[in-house]
Image (cartoon, rainbow, N blue to C red):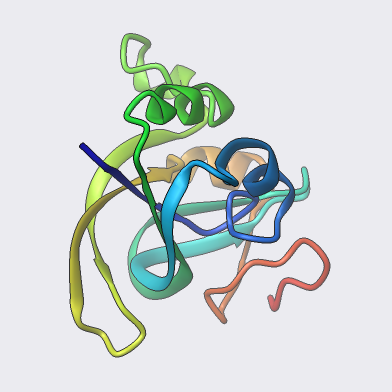
Length: 136
Protein backbone atom coordinates (compact mmCIF):
# COMPACT_ATOMS: atom_id res chain seq x y z
CA UNK A 1 0.00 0.00 0.00
CA UNK A 2 1.40 3.42 -0.89
CA UNK A 3 0.67 6.81 0.66
CA UNK A 4 0.54 9.95 -1.51
CA UNK A 5 1.15 13.38 0.01
CA UNK A 6 1.32 16.78 -1.71
CA UNK A 7 4.02 18.95 -0.11
CA UNK A 8 4.63 22.67 -0.67
CA UNK A 9 7.05 23.73 2.07
CA UNK A 10 9.80 22.26 4.20
CA UNK A 11 8.91 18.71 3.06
CA UNK A 12 9.77 19.46 -0.60
CA UNK A 13 12.87 17.71 -1.99
CA UNK A 14 15.94 19.74 -1.06
CA UNK A 15 14.31 21.37 1.99
CA UNK A 16 15.25 20.64 5.59
CA UNK A 17 12.35 18.38 6.55
CA UNK A 18 12.51 16.35 3.34
CA UNK A 19 15.95 15.17 4.34
CA UNK A 20 14.81 14.37 7.89
CA UNK A 21 11.44 12.75 7.20
CA UNK A 22 11.17 11.69 3.56
CA UNK A 23 14.53 10.92 1.95
CA UNK A 24 14.90 7.22 1.31
CA UNK A 25 11.24 6.48 2.16
CA UNK A 26 9.51 7.72 -0.97
CA UNK A 27 9.27 5.85 -4.22
CA UNK A 28 8.51 8.99 -6.23
CA UNK A 29 8.76 12.79 -6.01
CA UNK A 30 6.91 14.43 -8.88
CA UNK A 31 6.46 18.19 -9.46
CA UNK A 32 2.75 18.88 -9.05
CA UNK A 33 0.05 21.48 -8.44
CA UNK A 34 -2.78 21.74 -5.92
CA UNK A 35 -5.46 24.41 -5.74
CA UNK A 36 -5.41 26.76 -2.78
CA UNK A 37 -3.75 29.87 -1.44
CA UNK A 38 -0.17 29.80 -0.20
CA UNK A 39 1.15 32.03 2.59
CA UNK A 40 4.61 32.77 3.92
CA UNK A 41 4.54 32.74 7.70
CA UNK A 42 7.02 34.89 9.67
CA UNK A 43 7.88 31.81 11.75
CA UNK A 44 9.87 30.31 8.85
CA UNK A 45 7.55 27.98 6.99
CA UNK A 46 4.46 28.26 4.76
CA UNK A 47 0.79 27.51 5.16
CA UNK A 48 -1.84 26.69 2.59
CA UNK A 49 -5.57 27.27 2.83
CA UNK A 50 -8.37 26.20 0.46
CA UNK A 51 -8.74 28.36 -2.64
CA UNK A 52 -8.52 28.42 -6.42
CA UNK A 53 -4.92 29.55 -7.06
CA UNK A 54 -2.25 27.16 -8.25
CA UNK A 55 0.15 26.11 -5.51
CA UNK A 56 3.27 24.42 -6.80
CA UNK A 57 4.95 21.64 -4.90
CA UNK A 58 5.65 17.93 -5.14
CA UNK A 59 3.54 14.80 -5.03
CA UNK A 60 5.43 12.33 -2.84
CA UNK A 61 4.56 8.65 -2.90
CA UNK A 62 5.69 6.60 0.09
CA UNK A 63 5.83 2.85 0.56
CA UNK A 64 5.66 3.06 4.36
CA UNK A 65 2.04 3.58 5.50
CA UNK A 66 3.26 4.52 9.01
CA UNK A 67 4.95 7.62 7.59
CA UNK A 68 1.61 9.46 7.61
CA UNK A 69 1.57 9.21 11.41
CA UNK A 70 5.09 10.64 11.54
CA UNK A 71 4.09 13.54 9.26
CA UNK A 72 0.97 14.16 11.39
CA UNK A 73 3.25 14.73 14.40
CA UNK A 74 5.52 17.07 12.42
CA UNK A 75 2.51 19.09 11.25
CA UNK A 76 0.97 19.11 14.74
CA UNK A 77 -2.16 17.33 13.53
CA UNK A 78 -4.12 14.95 15.72
CA UNK A 79 -7.54 13.85 14.40
CA UNK A 80 -8.71 13.27 18.01
CA UNK A 81 -8.27 16.96 18.96
CA UNK A 82 -10.63 19.82 18.21
CA UNK A 83 -9.73 21.24 14.77
CA UNK A 84 -8.76 24.63 16.22
CA UNK A 85 -6.22 22.92 18.52
CA UNK A 86 -4.24 21.57 15.57
CA UNK A 87 -1.70 23.70 13.74
CA UNK A 88 -2.61 22.01 10.44
CA UNK A 89 -5.33 19.62 9.38
CA UNK A 90 -5.02 16.83 6.84
CA UNK A 91 -7.43 16.14 4.00
CA UNK A 92 -7.45 14.56 0.57
CA UNK A 93 -7.53 16.82 -2.51
CA UNK A 94 -7.10 16.40 -6.25
CA UNK A 95 -3.52 16.96 -7.43
CA UNK A 96 -2.48 17.94 -10.97
CA UNK A 97 0.67 17.57 -13.01
CA UNK A 98 2.32 20.64 -14.55
CA UNK A 99 0.11 20.26 -17.66
CA UNK A 100 -3.02 20.46 -15.44
CA UNK A 101 -3.87 16.77 -15.88
CA UNK A 102 -5.32 15.10 -12.79
CA UNK A 103 -3.00 12.81 -10.86
CA UNK A 104 -5.81 11.70 -8.57
CA UNK A 105 -6.10 12.42 -4.87
CA UNK A 106 -3.41 12.83 -2.25
CA UNK A 107 -3.18 13.96 1.35
CA UNK A 108 -2.31 17.59 2.03
CA UNK A 109 -1.79 19.59 5.21
CA UNK A 110 -3.82 22.80 5.32
CA UNK A 111 -4.12 25.53 7.93
CA UNK A 112 -7.30 27.24 9.08
CA UNK A 113 -7.51 30.74 7.47
CA UNK A 114 -7.99 32.35 10.89
CA UNK A 115 -4.70 30.85 12.12
CA UNK A 116 -2.85 32.08 9.01
CA UNK A 117 -4.18 35.58 9.67
CA UNK A 118 -3.29 35.41 13.38
CA UNK A 119 0.26 34.34 12.50
CA UNK A 120 0.68 37.24 10.05
CA UNK A 121 0.80 35.15 6.86
CA UNK A 122 1.62 36.98 3.62
CA UNK A 123 0.08 35.69 0.38
CA UNK A 124 2.62 34.21 -2.06
CA UNK A 125 1.11 35.14 -5.43
CA UNK A 126 3.54 32.93 -7.39
CA UNK A 127 2.31 29.80 -5.60
CA UNK A 128 5.89 28.67 -4.84
CA UNK A 129 7.47 28.87 -1.38
CA UNK A 130 11.17 28.99 -0.76
CA UNK A 131 12.77 29.67 2.62
CA UNK A 132 15.21 32.11 1.07
CA UNK A 133 13.07 34.11 -1.33
CA UNK A 134 9.35 33.67 -1.27
CA UNK A 135 7.81 35.78 -4.02
CA UNK A 136 5.18 37.79 -2.20
